[in-house]
Amino acid sequence: MKLSDQIKPISYLNAHAAEVVRNLSTHMQPLVITQNGEAKADMQDIKSYEQTQETMALLKMLALGQRQIDEGKVQPATDVVSKLRSQRKNR
Image (cartoon, rainbow, N blue to C red; front, side, top):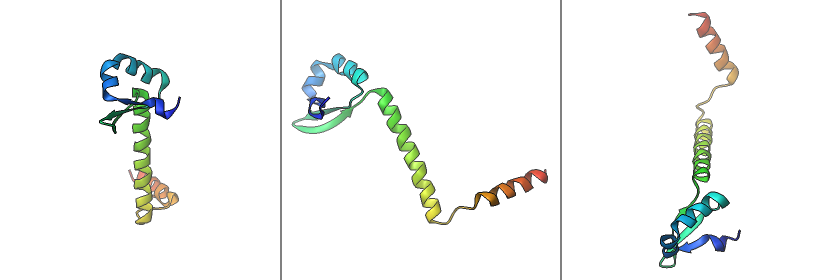
């Protein structure tokens, strides 16, 4: 499906809401809603939304990990494992 087919004015959404929701679920393509000729909203099916949220969460974790590496807030895995093993023996 062409991107230009996925841009609709808000009046179209008002007149065809049920059809729009059905198409979102079927085609899994986002729909851009315009108002006064400007893009104002993006609609997508719930599965795509959840996938986007999961992707964003993973990217945030990666960015945090990279920041910790850059700041030197990491330890070699062998050191951590050794420390955990010695703590377990001391219990």
